[in-house]
Length: 323
Image 1 (spheres, one colour):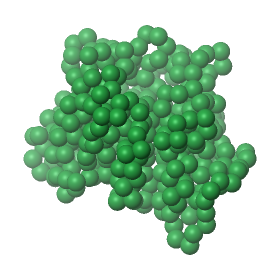
Image 2: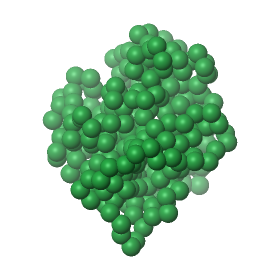
Image 3: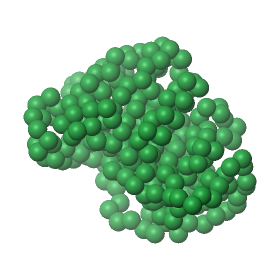
Image 4: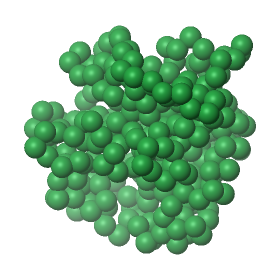
């Protein structure tokens, strides 16, 4: 495991970064190397207060089209930023981020469209309109039958980079000002997108992780036997307690893009909030080397497992500041 504290100068970081990225990619599994044209189709649209919500689909690879909600703010003369909005592990998938039958504080796509951002909210594989026929939502058996060497998280990462492609291809979107946000599983996907796609200039990840090394049961969280397997290689590493990377390395891969963690202090699902603080402390060493010490922060709260109104306001300020 790369010791981030031993990266002495900025000139040393590209080599160390390459080493970390290679290890993480090995865990995520091989993904398509070629990008296809999205060929966006608008299926329907509906007007809202200050925006138009469109249900679209587009190619993510040569064979598969996926669905997403695209929110287009009212016409303005200048280019606008865009935000990728990742949903939690909920059956309705993208509908949560669109504010359809969901907690309004997690309706990120609708919320930021009302503030003038272009937003996109795609279905994760196994959720929404992408549930494998004959299986329940988030049953990953279908993924591993088709692509045994690709992790579910790896597939989600690839699909989210394609969503950023869609945003960046919109004429009115400023491709240099793209962000990503998510809570729970959405927070995990937001961090991975920020780590592996340098177009993501700002990231808000809420209730996303405990470091593998600090987790009381990392297998249950990432590689459970009950059909919910995001990262199979966690199983083998958990047996020895030796991990080739941890979440501080994911954060460091995102540097110098701005990353804000929203960490609960009283959520039973995340019993060691100090773990996030440790990850940020370690990653901040790289941010400082790259001249961006203020671009990674860990906001803690006692609002439990949800995403509070106060957290949403802090996320708003973060996006406005960095986009």
